Length: 183
Image (cartoon, rainbow, N blue to C red):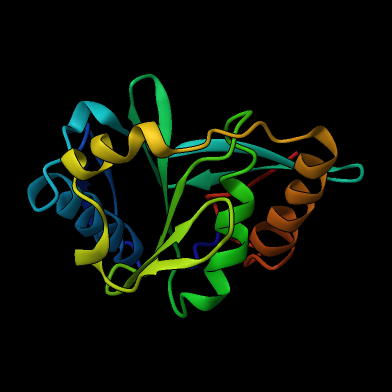
């Protein structure tokens, strides 16, 4: 199998303690989730990932990775999507994923390259913050919870959002990207 990144051995996943492949992307993902727990005081039990997201564009199907989700009060409140490079190109597919992962709109969407981060309102796509420090802490997210509108996503909208994720994450992916499963 061809790999598109330098494998540096194994590392311990911060959330699960399991051994995973060590590469530059994974180190940046781990840095991001460690920040959520250590600096923003999220309980590890409220963060899960990676999460598999099935997408489709017409007859084409795939499963893509959503790096982390934060759940509070039995609802997914925040989605975190990692991608190397420019954050601008990560915004739209992350918003689309936030409209597919649950039957409702996930309120907050974070895109990160492991160095920078942007926080977006899931409904509008408006940029709410432009750095890791702008990510709300777990206590701040709990305070905002009652104000979130977990609006249902209509099936027609979900179908279109799925095409967007497919275009960005599958069609535009390196052919040897092993985080994507083309079905």
